[in-house]
Length: 120
Image: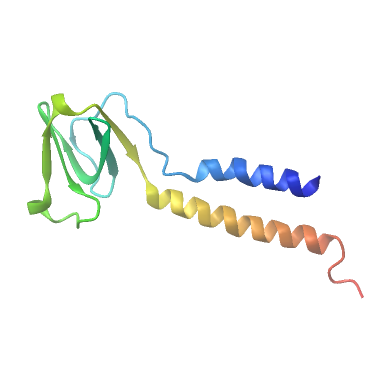
């Protein structure tokens, strides 16, 4: 019973370890922070950019696999062709996952040792 509860709790906590993708309301105009990742949805396809720039008539950004300083890599789309935008932080999601796994191992060790792992 305890093992099933621990597995269920871990699965529920793991749901909180994603990139935290969310839709900003309203979409801010101007430049976002350079490392802020943005999913630009267009026709059922998501493009992931950073160094995003939102203007009244267009949205532009650099593919996240490219360096932020690569201005020749910048892609621009007319704002009317963009279905939606989502902001997120996959790096923060990674560190949340590392923390969850590390915390789970420490908790398992504490529970195991509280049952007498050091007794003779």
